Image 1 (cartoon, protein in one colour):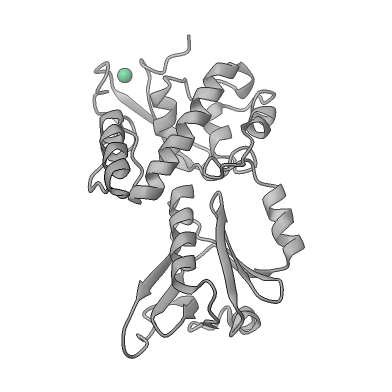
Image 2 (cartoon, rainbow, N blue to C red):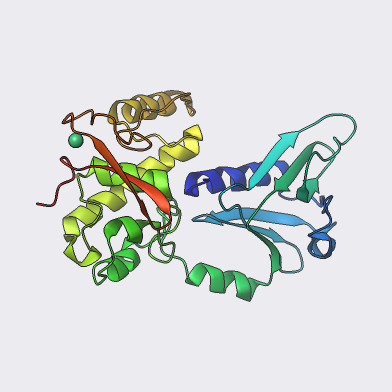
Length: 274
Ligand SMILES: [Zn+2]
């Protein structure tokens, strides 16, 4: 599932391809024909993401609001010559003379007013990728809650942008028992998790991959500082999708259980309640 870093990369790709131009907007599949007609030919001003929500601002105070959900894909590709025909069920297409963006299978694709966009953002928790985000807002909700930290990290009204993979790995990185209630989490633990997520998501934006292994992170950050970019083909995970395998740290078995609708993975020994 796309997590916050995917949406941030997508917003940048849309900006690079279309910002400042008046692209064609259509719905080859037909399901978004009315919405596309409201945006077609308007100036595309700016694309931005908050958590897993994408907002593309057009002229006349109209916004495109997209949520990819579990299977949605929004590809932005350059082309030369004739516009490539749409392949499959393309809900939305944005195209210029040199780039085309096709959206398939989103959970949500709608045209919004500025007030509606503000209302959506107001319901979201802080996004670690936004420099002006206030982690205090997440703490306020988290430290009074009887729900588990594994549930709370997935709740987009607590924290925006974290999905299942970041959840599993960040809890392991801080050796936090995923079933500990929010109100049992100590402030320094939360501050460390937030600071770590800011770092992890930033590397995710650079690489397009979720990287949580410390050696891989240090290597990527060093390469990115030197060249401005870095990539990794096959990141190593401590717990994610490693159910039944041995923990790299303590050798005990990695557990799994569905929490907040997704398979949580954790080490029962390293992340034991203290
Ligand atoms: Zn372990």
